[in-house]
Image 1 (tube, rainbow, N blue to C red):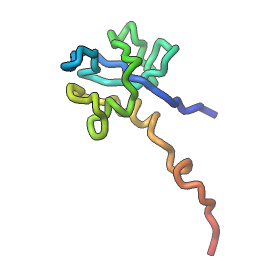
Image 2: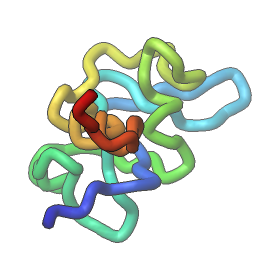
Image 3: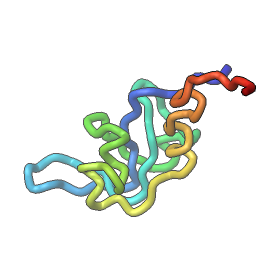
Image 4: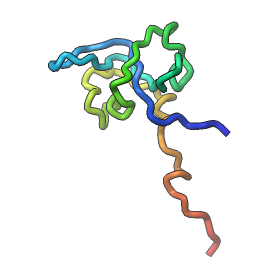
Length: 98
């Protein structure tokens, strides 16, 4: 059984600084779990030249809901799919024949 990652942060290809002076992710964005050297989709952070943003949660980097997604251009679909809740986890009702 494969464990689904929880509590992912962000790794991104570039950086911008908001008016408060805090680094924010920009460009291509991937999910990253702290304590590892790779993204959820399997890219090595050092070889891919991705910067770590441990202070930015994954949901905050998504353009449709995130508050730190002003400069995000592309969200990795493999990382997005890996962190999406499973349908059977959302709906726990068992199937029953009528």
